[in-house]
Structures are given as C-alpha cells and as structure tokens.
Length: 197
Figure 1: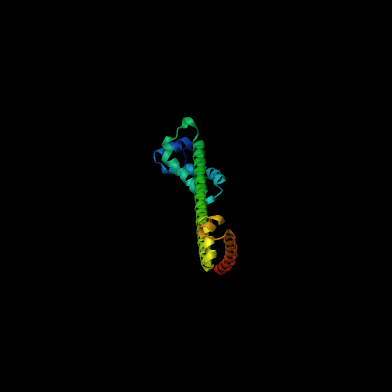
Figure 2: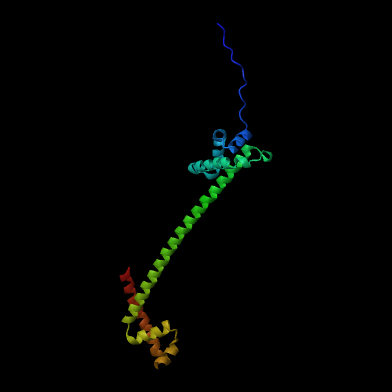
C-alpha cells in the first residue's frame, strides 16, 4: 500500500498590518476582525490607564476600531506603522472621552450649584419678606408719635433735628420718642420673630 504524499507547502506568513489595513480599506470585515484580535488587549490597556473606567474604556476601544474601519484608506504607511497609528487613535479618543466626562461633570456640578444658590436666594428672599412683614406689623402696634418719628428717621432718612422742625416739636421730645419707639419695636420684633419660627 502506497503512502499518500501531501505536497509540502510553507505555512502562509502572518498577514502584515499594512496588508490588513489595505484590506480594511477595501471593506474586508475579516481583516478588521484580525486587526482587532491582534491589538485589542494592548489598546484596551492603554485606554483604561487614561480613563480609569472599564465601561468607558470598552466604549472607546469600539470607537477606535470603528474609526480604523472608516479611515483605513487614509493611512499612509510612509508616515509610520499601523500599530503607531492605532495607538495615536486610541490615545486621542481616550483623551477626548476624558475631557467629555470632565465637561459633563463640570456641567452637572455647576447646575447643582445654581440650584443650591437659587434655593438659598429664595430662602433669603422669603426670610427678608417675613422680616419686613414683622417690622411693618410691629410698627403698626407702636403709639402714633413713636411710629411717626421712626418712619421719618429710618424710612425717609431725616435727621433728628429735621424731624423736630418738621413736627414742630422740641429736639429732646423727638429723641425720647425715638428711643422709646426703638425699645418697644425691639420687644415687639423679638416676640413676632419667635412666633414665625
């Protein structure tokens, strides 16, 4: 019985990166898969070191190979090796993602700060309105002569001498009414503010 002889052929050499990119440029999906299998781990490691997030790194790796698929025809082998080109793509996409994440975080932080400031402003406005209401109510409870001198002094800006002339009252009387009015106003406001809390 004769032994069958098989023609001895050399095993084909591994396809070069340049050949794979040329095939990808022609739309060969198998070439893209080969390039992916060849470099996915090393590129993933590089992207992960930049982003420190596995899910983000996985997304960026997909973007890199999508870009390689779309731009393979633009690769110029006289300007460098395919691996260097892929590393440059990976690094650029990872840095873009890092900036995007930082920008998103800044926008979220700024929006949260604005909400906090708006709430604080609203609370301050409400407190001011509440205090103004308390002052108005307390003023209304003062005797007329005390209320009149306080309104002229604090709301219209008159000096004690000007108030005395305006009311045709002695300066000492105006001072006494102001002092008595302020003491009473303080007491009334203290009570009203306690009630509002």
